[in-house]
Length: 138
Image (cartoon, rainbow, N blue to C red; front, side, top):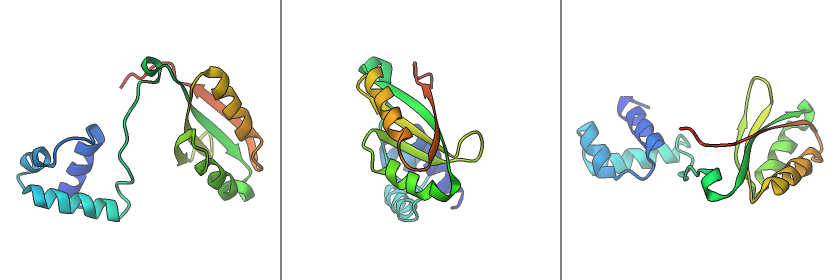
């Protein structure tokens, strides 16, 4: 990635719906060049997907960022199981307090608790540590 690619990524992280022509103007390049660069970033799996940031509270949903401690020999089994769950919206492999972090979204707190309980039953999951999202601040 060169400096223009980095700038494109930064811009898209702030606003994934920004018109390509605006990106082009800010970088002093053509819209076609921006399209080509974005396609290249997607092909290289630098940009994985585009999605909305939702204010769960306003939308009437319940959500958590949940840490999972897992048995090392079951790590990839746990990851594959979590990837299949529709209510798991984002999933990260981490170094730190937990092996895996996940964004989990539910219709209400009861359903969110059930999802956490269901995940705790996956072979290899040692501990489920939810942090319930109360509000989106940024």
